[in-house]
Length: 251
Image (cartoon, rainbow, N blue to C red):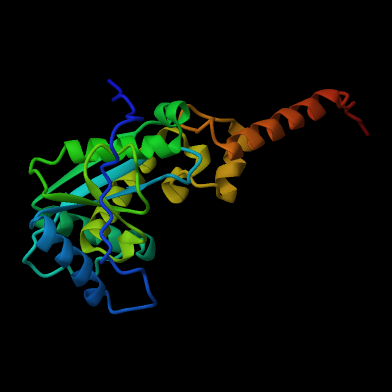
């Protein structure tokens, strides 16, 4: 059953003035220490880092992960913002993160939910589901990006958090690996769209598949790009229908 979208009520976001703005390149291990260390001193040792992937694609679900990493153990070497890692690097890091995590939860929102409540609220819904699947209660939640007024838990938003906070980076890797796996499974049923390679993003091969095979139930009809492609396909069909049947010439 779909959870109701909370539109009213107090804003649970807690913005802490001491959190520094993102600066130029710093050693990753230096970036990992300050924000989470300060939040743990204020809120408690168990921070849940939350991130989502899949807001931009024109096909497939949006997937979120919430993860609580041990506060007093060294960071896993190689962890970084999932967008900065190769698929092979993410695949190697994901089992290490799952093994070391105190708890993690995965949540998703379907294409139907994306088209019904919009991608922003669907992302919030996926985050809520991920948090609800943690078997350990965190002291506080940190999320990548800006404030989410409809996220019904107290949280601190961290702009570019997947590149600045270890827990959020771990969440981004698990969310990305999970979504890539889901899209690869869907690609077995819908091979024309090469989702195993593009994960539902608007690549040339994906668009070629749309033009030749049409849209699937896993395409986001509420997205402008899908509507543009539908209009293009309809126009192409009208043109083809207006062309007379050619007469085969024989020699």
